[in-house]
Length: 130
Image 1 (cartoon, rainbow, N blue to C red):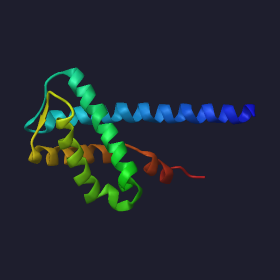
Image 2 (cartoon, rainbow, N blue to C red):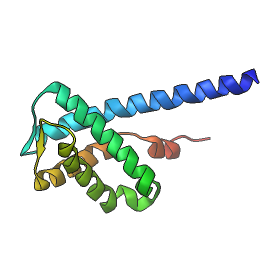
Image 3 (cartoon, rainbow, N blue to C red):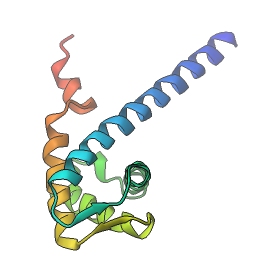
Image 4 (cartoon, rainbow, N blue to C red):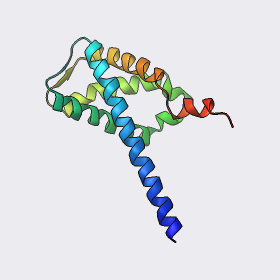
């Protein structure tokens, strides 16, 4: 029984650390995206943090509801369009976050390019040799 609780605690720690790493990397990518995207305005640093968290939550909910990240096409055009929609919709939840539709498409492209350069779980699976 103790081993079950120990295993459960270890899994909870791994999930929490994965979520924390995802928040930090997504916020970093988001900061670069905001800097390079025209007509993308965030009024202050707390608004930036709130909008980054909102984008992460919306992305997580979309992946749960639609399963977009589970299919290979999810990393292509469907992932690009869903990222643009999430980036645009965030302005309706966060006051001080302003973006146009065209800028959300540009931001999704920048976000996707930078995110593709970073190692993730799928890429690492093929790099590890048994």
